[in-house]
Length: 334
Picture 1 (spheres, rainbow, N blue to C red):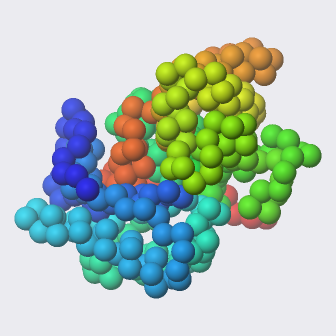
Picture 2 (picture 1 turned 135 degrees about the vertical axis):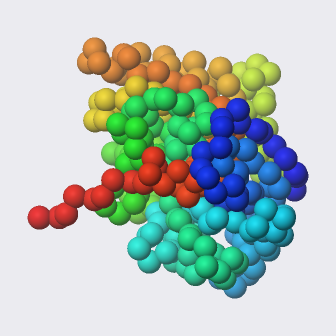
């Protein structure tokens, strides 16, 4: 738990000065915070994501974190809304989430839960990938960019698209789910039901499993993917090799997405991105290798600027700046 964090130099984005209660649900942790109209973040609470127990226990964990933050908004007149970003897939029409990596939250009615935390305020539910992308577009590495992919490489791999300056979420609100782009048609089975997905090659979970299998760590000794990233930055040859493999896999997926969407920028965040140059050098080398068409060479890759706050800031942006970040209406199915 912590109080004030990063502060943006942006001026107030809305006449309503009340903050948004932002919630970011990931495979390892759930973060809640107040996000203000200038994109600054305060009163953050971070708790481990529940992995055992039932639906009621999971609801209690999320609710306790949210209420722990809400009490700090009373002096500001409460919150103007609740913005939730979650690992997916999600169903915003039903107000539910079904994260592949979090079985206890399958079909969880997040909108119903949130409506009980602060009645009579709007609740917006979006995928964590698009929230990360919107956060970086509003106040981070993607500021002013027209076409970008935001990619979070953490317990899983998530993504979100900004096209022509607007979020593109698609008819089901799950567009940009790059973690389940297939990079190896003959690869291993994925929990999503497919096989050979990017997430199996580049997620923190996958990297740590490969490191342990190669003798870097013994199961159960407390090592994490973040520790592996630290080791890679420090020059550990095994860790650097694993991040190089992950970077090449990410580059294959990034090049494919850029070929479809003609991207200006790809912003990469999440715990795995903490490896720094060992990962980003491999991504850049891989994209040079795979980018055959001339227009693909203009796609830049940058690390996320907001760090762990990107998803929170993006979840709040949908409520602070609804005209800028309202997703375009889906094209009717013929």
